[in-house]
Length: 213
Picture 1 (tube, rainbow, N blue to C red):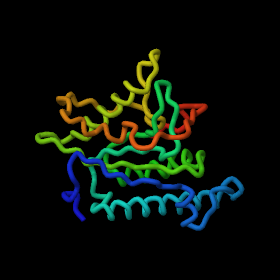
Picture 2: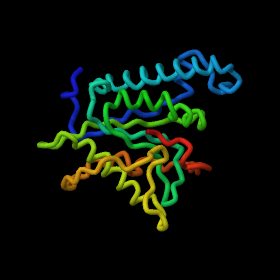
Picture 3: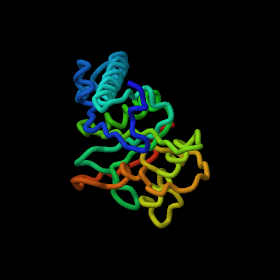
Picture 4: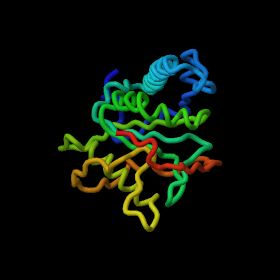
């Protein structure tokens, strides 16, 4: 199904995704992951990532689009209720903001530190948000959107002594393109708290432990 079915500048949510469920569907129990041999752990990671992508791809198809066809997209990965992260400037469920070929990027994240992060909070669910930014006369608007989102996040969640504060798994602010601001600021939706208030706040002992490329 082609991406022209996607609404431009609109967020599609794939919610309540669980690493424990991915692994169970692949035939493994993450509760005893550390008890497996190294070779079995490698197999668990491989099979679990395959199941994760299958689950997310299927959810996207149900919403009317193919994840693999969004080559200039933006996306957000968040903790699902009832959990959140205690950032210096406040509480947020957002852990990563990214852009690019979404299928390729999300799969690469799973194969690296996203798997480890999800394993470290075993039992937690995650929400994914996907969008295809569009602005007439631009070819790299998605870069602008990512940069704008990250800087807005930093302005909300850094403390008064910090210059910047990115989401837990982000390293940098993305590429600034100097486009005029978006009048409707449609990109804010997955960054802003909405719905039920999370019941739990988690504070990482090391904010740099799970940074993604």
